[in-house]
Image (cartoon, rainbow, N blue to C red; front, top):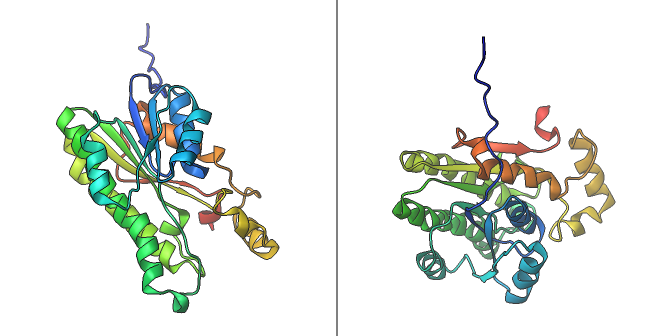
Length: 253
């Protein structure tokens, strides 16, 4: 008696087009590199031409840099309208202004919620609309945070933006399912990047973080590359509307 052996879905992305926002450094750069190394034709995007051109050169594999300020919604619409449909979006551009809630100004609110939520909100349908018009399936990956699942001191703005991002992700997944387009978030713990490195220079802050990450080390961008590749590929074909939590045990208590 012979059995039909199931075949592992491919993690390869050959022939697919991917766009990554905020890809000049840190998590975005790592995400773009992961997709390119898996065979995707990657367009890394950032506001600063010099930074994103250097990033594309580092990524290699034919990566083509593009300059785009995702807070400029007219520019976002134009960017996606003038290009063939992408198969994968990593909605990564974001910022943070840690401070106690009573120190938050309207300008702080607008800066953090404007980039982390408003820009992410409008980038997604601009990209998904082209996917739908092209008649193909696709994967939207939004870079959330563990702070979209828990709270944190001095993180009211960041938590507000990332909790909201997780909510819109679920709704996007329902809107897009009939078109074969998936929408998921990745929720990392604190990852060492150029943006967070100054925080870790504070010994007390670093010790506090390490006390909560049960695996006993600060996260690195490489820790997220597999998650990005998984959600972009056919290996996650039945996943949509959910969050892949990569926190080293922070949320296990």
